[in-house]
Image 1 (tube, one colour):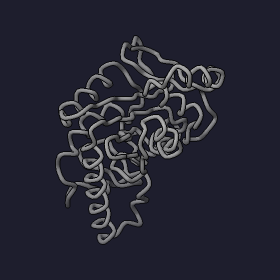
Image 2 (cartoon, rainbow, N blue to C red; image 1 turned 60 degrees about the vertical axis):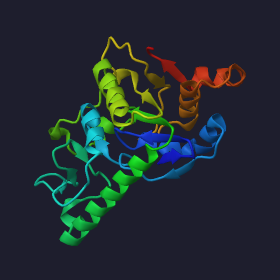
Image 3 (tube, rainbow, N blue to C red; image 1 turned 90 degrees about the horizontal axis):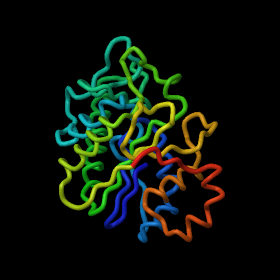
Image 4 (cartoon, rainbow, N blue to C red; image 1 turned 120 degrees about the horizontal axis):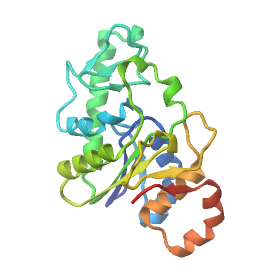
Length: 241
């Protein structure tokens, strides 16, 4: 899920389910760090699977309604897609079960989620969370032939940051990029957080994510020192600034 308070929002922007899950798991931790209660809720990117290089363009897509003709059920594809984008509604299939009535409901659902996303982005301070650390991306993605990319590089991170700044110029935008080390195209100069490796299928390690989020928010030195042992074991490696 994504999280929001009166002045702050943490917003998943892909590329799969892990950032939504970890924002939910760390909601109390984040509330304490930002100094206001954060409620969890649904948003457009939470449970999509999105090709990494499609994220900036999909952010731009959020300015237009999801309507009849926006969602398709292509032959040979197991789940619905956002037409014109490599974005798969992974949890809304299989296509064989989707009737015309269900398709209308799906269109209404994603339009509602799009509006939720825009509401989150109305907060004064926005933290956009982009993550490719989910372990099963390469093996479980059902549309490998659709050219889903999972790697992050400097260009993607720069384009994503530019997109959110262009779309939401009022207030403050911060981008948190979380990646597996083997899914970074080097050299990389942009700041990326690399959690310690975990054995989860897709969920991620909550303690490692807590360390990622603390570092991202610049938690006080005392808190970092108290957690330094755990951070070394399960925390983050800042690849670049």
